[in-house]
Amino acid sequence: MWYDGTQLGKVTVVGLPSHCQLATNPTGLCSGGLLREHSQEALDCVRTLSVFALREKTVVFVRGQQMGRNLITGGLGLIGISLARRLLRDGEEVVLFDVASDSEFLKDIAHRVKVVQGDLANWAQVADAVKSNDVACIYHLGALLTPACEASPQAAYMVNMNGTLHVLEAARLFGLASVIFTSSIATYGPGAPPVVNEDSVQRPTTMYGVTKIAAERLGDYYHRRFGVNFRCVRYPLVVGPGHTVGISRYAREMIQKPALGRPYQAYVDESVRLPLIYLRDAVWALVCLKRAEEQDLKRRVYNLGGFYVTAGELADIVRGYLPEAQIDFSPDKTALKVLSDMFRDMDGTRAREDWGFHLQYTVDEFVQDFISEVQSSPSLYE
Image 1 (cartoon, rainbow, N blue to C red):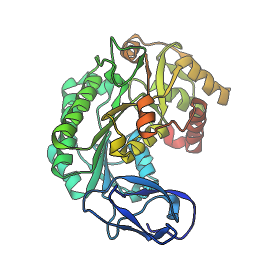
Image 2 (image 1 turned 180 degrees about the horizontal axis):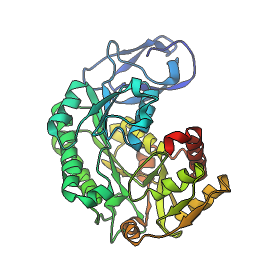
Image 3 (image 1 turned 90 degrees about the horizontal axis):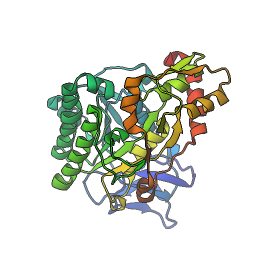
Image 4 (image 1 turned 90 degrees about the vertical axis):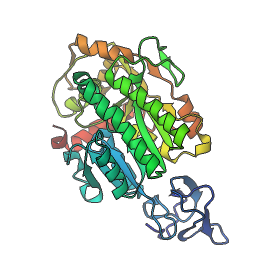
């Protein structure tokens, strides 16, 4: 996508490493959208420059060469499809890797992405997906979630642990520019303080949490040993419209069901307090981390801050926008026991200081946006 002569001020220029220069005219404005290429290495850096804008204010290509594609593992999941939409909007190419072959949430962008059906536990399938699609970056989101991990710890190890090893090996062997991994507050457990940062003790009590912390350490090792550009965010509970089966789904259901005019009975009590992050902010964090300058990163794993609200407070916010909402509480002891290890806030200071991540939505704004999204396509969220 080349610049169309429309002057729109600040634009994001993707694919420009530190040793490349913009081919400019005497006024310093972009000349035809071309870059002077100084290297053949993978290009994944970003500069924000005052230039003539590109159509949709998105992307500059190196002369005769487009950035490699993004492979999203778990690509048909809640975060994966939302990330795909964001990357497409920014002019990037996307390949979705998933055990499923299709999703109803993919229909609006199905013609713009490639879906590769495969299993993270299968090395040959992962390697082929990377090699055959000119992949430059892997967003590694694929994993079995808590209920499935507890039902079969062996399957969890094969998918979550071996799958991560396969992703990192592919990145090493094929010289990928970056691997962006999603970890979780589930890596914390007993002994962690009320507010956790990157230095807080991690003693997960679920198989899901165990696989996530092990994958963090494996990614850090591959960075130190082989130079793989592994970067990771630890999420609070990600909340957004869709269909998820995780143990923390109460926050999503508490908004989505009333938005559809249905009653909801939460399996937690009103005092349960967990940190939340809106889906759009969760996606934005991944994009920001990928584009961050390497010299700005002081670690490979970063916590993301969110909103530390009780289930009762969230229900009240929902009722503020949907006065007729019927939300009741019927606590489930098993669910509360699992969630109890996550009853703490996350300190996102280092992500903010090192690579400038800020939430784009307040808690009220995300609830309002969530409701609007569901009500705009109710049949999709039934």
